[in-house]
Length: 81
Image (cartoon, rainbow, N blue to C red; front, side, top):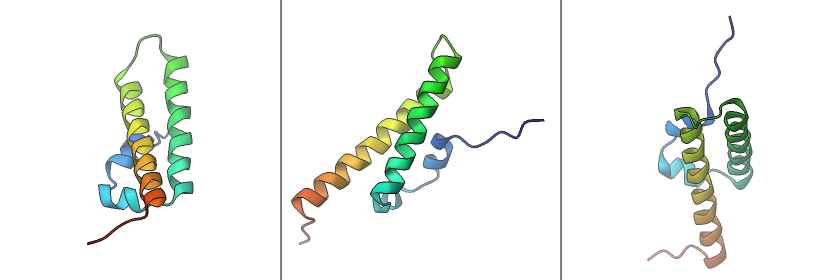
């Protein structure tokens, strides 16, 4: 019997938004790389787009959005007040 591993989507789904933004760039880039591998794997495995494929794409867009937000914050400098 093959042990089913958690997908990156399932892992990201459990992380609160503020914790996701607090992750470091290397951690976010790692999530992004793993998600890209998942998307490619689903594309090669199935001809039609499955629910898992759509979830992987959604999670990839989410991680890329968080990376953009963190990049913008660092470029502009976080201003409080």
